[in-house]
Each structure stands twice: as C-alpha cells, then as structure tokens.
Length: 167
Image 1 (cartoon, rainbow, N blue to C red):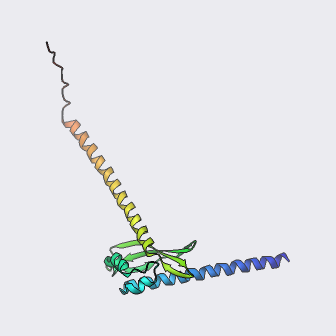
Image 2: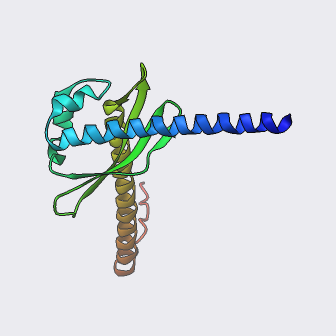
Image 3: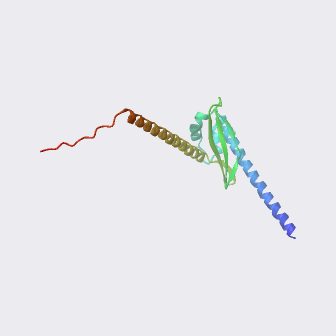
C-alpha cells in the first residue's frame, strides 16, 4: 500500500518537474526568437515578444550592439520568471557585454521583460562605474600621500612664528 503511494508521489513529482522543464524550454525559445529578431533588425517582431511592445525603445537601446553575436547561457527558473545570462560579443571579439535576458509568464505566455533587462544592465553598469571611481579615488589618495611625504623630506620645517609684544 505505502509502496503504491510512494510510486504515485514520485510519478507526480516527475510530471511536475518535466512540466517545469517544458515551461523553461518555451521561455528559452522566446528568448532565442527575440534575439534573432534583434539581430535581423526586425524590432517590430522583437517588440511583439516583450511586455512593453515598444520597437523604438528596443532599437534605440540596442542600436550600438546591432552587429554583435548573441550567446545565451543556461536558463534559470526563478518563480514566474526565467533568467538567461546573455553575452553580446562584438564582431571582432574584442568587446563583450554581459546582461540578463529576463522572460516572464503572463496570461499563460512567455514575454521578454525588456525594460527590466535594461534596468538590470544599467544598475550593473552604475555599480561598475562606482567601483572604478572608488579605485581611482584610492589611487589618487595614495599619490597625494606620496607627494606629501616627498615634500616633507625636501622642504624644511617652517620656523614657528614668535608673537610680537606690543607696548
């Protein structure tokens, strides 16, 4: 009796897992279609796969990367979303842009959350710029300290001022 119950439980979990894999596969297919439309500069079709349906926004934000190769990583299911690490690689291969393709399930259909992708990318870019500024600031502080040490060695200590007495 308990063996049958266990088999039913295992079978149910297997069906749920396979259904989840199928859903992730459908989301991945939407991501592939989206990036194919972007690469062929069919921003209208790409926009139909997004929540926002704004071809001008997609074209404007991806204009500089229109000739880049798109490499999609392994999709990860996170609640009602599938997130795919994505690389845009320049034709020369010298420059790589890392971002996340975010796909969400809405009304039983997968859609690209394009504005969320842009926000995530810009947030990451802001953090990287801040890190560079912090690193530069540390370097500049060290240079100023080194100059101060050098000046302290070269220049004599100033004579203390003696207050003059007034009568």
